[in-house]
Image (cartoon, rainbow, N blue to C red; front, side, top):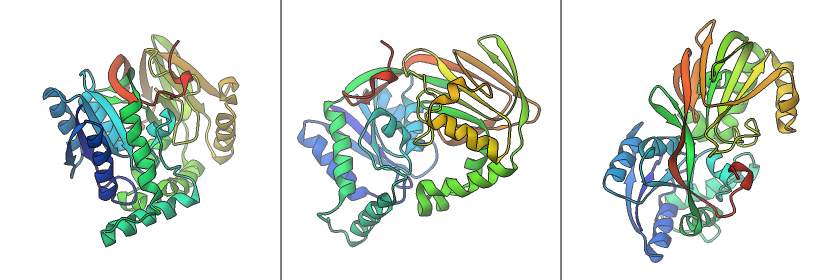
Length: 332
């Protein structure tokens, strides 16, 4: 199998070059020919993945976080080259959703595991207790034993997203967090800014056209999902399927800390589907306009602002997933 591994050393809290070498060694022992490319600037992974697809490479492996997965996917949409994932980022929602082995970003022990990997990298010696290596080797085993499926992607102004687009509050929070903060605090870097922003972020009048059906709302957050999980643990897109040709739209109405606390509890219990203050829709095309421009992110990467049009590209990307990936992510 001819493959190219694109490694983002800026992803996550530690550099894991030694662990990546072990991943490549495992793939090589199983008959794969793997070239490696280390990115150094934004969107370089997209260009490299696109070039690999042109050269007929069968699999491009994203070794980074969800941002790297996003960039690599953008280079592979509409090609016969499959996307594989080695999750070394901060949150790794795609891996968590698909059941690809990864570290749970919210567990306190994760910090200690990543610290051990950092020490190993600094002393240039392998440590037998490096649990991080074991997790990544198990993720590499998915590449060897998994199955390739075609999944949908969303598209906004020529940019694709594999997981979700967020409009409003969450995009504002993402814009406020620096790479340095993410490196130091990991997933916890989002918690305090989010709590502060929820307290003072006001709702905005929005108009949505969902496959031509007009909806008006006063909202501070709209999430358009292709998968079920959001932010690692919130099943906002509870009904989402990655191959049904549709995107799931969740409109959170209202504002203020108390309102969002209620929304969060409803989402965690999956009762938000029944909440009249939370709109849930499935459609192929979404047009969103708002009384004031709202920031927009795609797969956790700040991108644009409203107004915008989002559409679905059915079965536009090939991905490698575990053979036991959650069945409710796929259509019958």
